[in-house]
Image 1: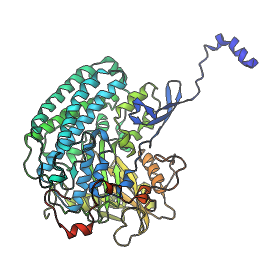
Image 2 (image 1 turned 180 degrees about the horizontal axis):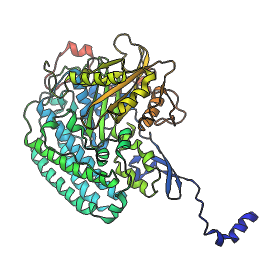
Image 3 (image 1 turned 180 degrees about the vertical axis):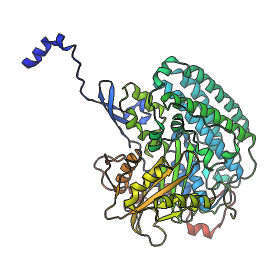
Image 4 (image 1 turned 135 degrees about the vertical axis):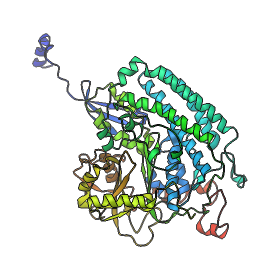
Length: 396
Length: 200
């Protein structure tokens, strides 16, 4: 210890009134940390409690699907894409199939489109229920988790009933959907339709899901601690959201009433009556509230689809070998996390020459360095969690 | 299938959209095939084009690239002759009517450089870093052009067509042991030419 240090200690009483210097400290979060939803690492430079700079480090889950797609046929790629966002695996399969169908000029039968639509909305409910329950958990409230995951399990059971898989259905084919679970290779000529009792059980489950939404509103939205931690925290203004490609519920929370289901026609949504919930402030609370309302809207869509489910074939006539004519197409869908799109470049082969996967979480997360600047350290988790990303969807 | 698919927008709509935005920025070409509006611009007008379009299409969807190569290490080569180049493309859209357009430009393989879009769209930052490591395209003026996914010191650019997929070099199709031979054009066309409702 030098004389100067000793001197400083002697004069410590005097120095208390002087503002303490807090030099930049580097704070590392993750990649292994429950609050990071997988393997995300954040390197934060903090000055006391204030964040000066954040650098997200991603790529721990990078599986190179865009490269793998180049050596696979289109039906094989379906098995890959349901692993991009595993919380709503089914939803990622649909836009890819629609893209291939557009290039081949194939229209799936109505019944197949309705089944796709019902399963997509189920994936949305299941994904949002995970968010609605895990987000309060991150803020210290474990009870909502039990309520939401109980109903999510029923939705997953229904998805499994039809597709045979809970997370990775791999249920779509070019021109329609697969025969339901149970028809194996040994009974090729038997086309199974939706399992018996599926539609009735769906209606019952939807009713309970709406019930759990009411529970969540009581449990969470009125909770004073939850309000304190989310209201006015992590505001994304509209112009930033658009420039960063923030989409889906995160964009709608900022007040933009835009939904790809209303403008694009990858599935027959135009015949359905549903609203687009939008927030006002673009803070963490609005992002939570919007997703809660979206479950109600998805329930409305499923109810209408079940009641008007057309009969008919599950698949259009397609060549035995799927060869896609030369061309480029971009098809996007309103996935639970936001805009999910596939840019398919076909050179006339059985697989794509290039497949660009536009995943929602990647763009949603890319706003983080801007968003966290100047925020407080305890708000990192609140803001991070409110974006509802999945690392598989970020890294692809 | 003779009738046009009801879920695809009328071809003229996309073509009209491409025409309209193409005129706005002086595009080299504007097409609307398969319901996808696309315009092509020259690389030196890249940033200017996006700045103009941003006023009408403020939503930045993505930026990526295509490696057009006659000889490929993975997958099938393109049909016929192809001009060796990198094609960088972005997609911009609005958030009211659902209009959108793909903007692309061609870069030479010898020295693929393009001005960064970070000043126009903040979201281009990560997308350009991805295109940089995956294709080796250099974005001039980018504030932090470092690897996004790949570890430091990774050699090569994985999404280039010359980059081999090592697992496929070792074993052409690993799924073969599980079930049956992959259907090839030859053995299927010799057998059943077309299947019924079940597809492949």
